[in-house]
Length: 346
Ligand code: UP5
Ligand code: MG
Image (cartoon, rainbow, N blue to C red; front, side, top):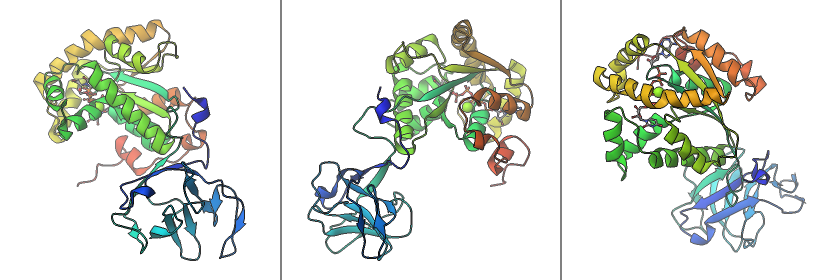
């Protein structure tokens, strides 16, 4: 897969869609407009216009180049039609074209205004390879807690396969009924469902945020899951490292039943927990053994208190963690997750 498509600093691609003038829709690439001096006297360099990044149409059709740019005189971001007339604008001082607010339809535009998605790598190219660490352990062993800590504190992206499945079940698509059946029975959801969800989520994150350090929580839970993984990321590529959270059953039971009071999860009850734990022993432990034989498994005793567990997790992630983030003081969220501050009442 394309190293040429690794995210580069200051190189964003914009996808514009849903405009009342369909000719405005399309892919916009970093501008190649030559250096110039704007009405407000700002000298622009290639890729920049009025001191902010700017974009041309990827198909080379725009009459004005760049066709998405910032105006210092009007203090607004602007999207132009193919003939160069202003169609949509947004008065603000944001560094990048806003993606979270509705654009204004200018007099040469037609409603609705388009939506903009930022891509950190060229969407026409295959997605860059992620850096993955798997996090595995019994139900309640602390996977979600530690991954969320690493996300809020160390800049990792936390993808919980259980959460992905639960959102898919709530979205009510064609796989919702199947997912519901397996989760309630504490069994493993068929491979093709989980592997597709995982691949799409990882690609979306890398493309739209540029982040590529992933903690995959709760996967692979079986050797079959691992085969599914190799169908996406070829078997020749290096096997990711696994953090295995070891914790005895009585502690897991105490934690899950404690969490059951507020989690609202259909599988947080004594019966489902036993089934989940049986599935873990039968299907997941052989996977852990496989990673151990390959020298890719780090075992962490997660019956310890959260701070001790987090210290070990942080150490094992440090080779890929941004050093500046490791030294950052704890965020409020991290203090809550570590039990150093109470959960907010609401
Ligand atoms: N807690 C955490 N760490 C603690 C510590 N060190 N000391 C004291 N307390 C600690 O933690 C559980 C509770 O313990 C929390 O209250 C926490 O505060 C406390 P949590 O971090 O939530 O544990 P976690 O390991 O994430 O537990 P979870 O219940 O989420 O694990 P499961 O593996 O059972 O659940 P998951 O959501 O991953 O999967 C659910 C179901 O989805 C599976 O059973 C399966 O049916 C299906 N599934 C698949 O089929 N395939 C997949 O790939 C993924 C899921
Ligand atoms: Mg979890």
